Image (cartoon, rainbow, N blue to C red; front, side, top):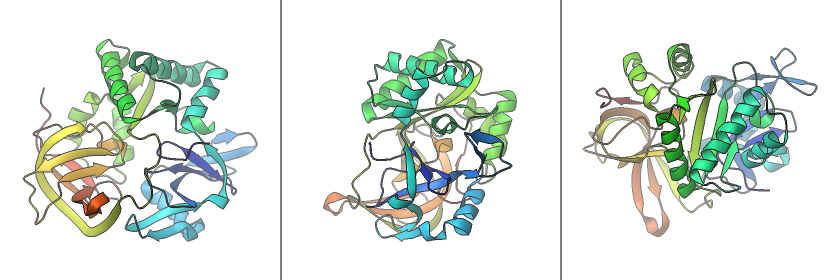
Length: 332
């Protein structure tokens, strides 16, 4: 069994399904947050169990504090409070690669068939091998509903770069199309629950993103994780420096498609400002371009790497109210 990382999901002995977050996990625990909650009146069914989906960050935190408060840990390496699920509490691990293989072996109609066709299209164009592409989200755990989408996940830096170019060619050839109309409005409404947006900028930028759109009439998202295995715990240490609002200019956006996305920034208007913007939230992927002027709110943190290398970065999306806001419309 592969070690869980971003894109995996785990089911607890209680039945709750958590999605795994990030690339660093402490020994004996997995950083993960609740996504599907057992509920007799829930609209999603698997076998004899019904579930409801937690949509906002506040809903997820409420479930943790109400039922899993013992999972909240002030992590000495990650430098903040995280929901860390002890391994003994985990009944099942859902691996995206294995999930895709199971879909291929099963029914090919509707959403499931479209998901397999999209994954195969990306894999064929990018030359991806076994273990480099999978399926995540509701399809991975068998809880898809009428409004579910296709969640593709790719692992490994080189594989991700090739997959991104595959998504570009698929968009150029009309195999996929951008989000538009009611779909864009729905996305804005859902994300606005915990992320402030300027609606005009949202409608200008979101359709340009290759990591989301429509395929065969179904909405999709593609998560590009530049690692195949979790990062060794304690390889880097993180020290919080408080919440900050910064302004600056994007110097390098070449890693904006990854999860976590990363922007190298300069001309930052805070004392000892960060040199990077980083986020594990997909909504901030492909969000800025080089030379964009931006404003952002997030957690300022010091990253201590091997050899005591020091980097200051702004981690965006870890708390309600975080945002990255471009200061001008995207270039044509």
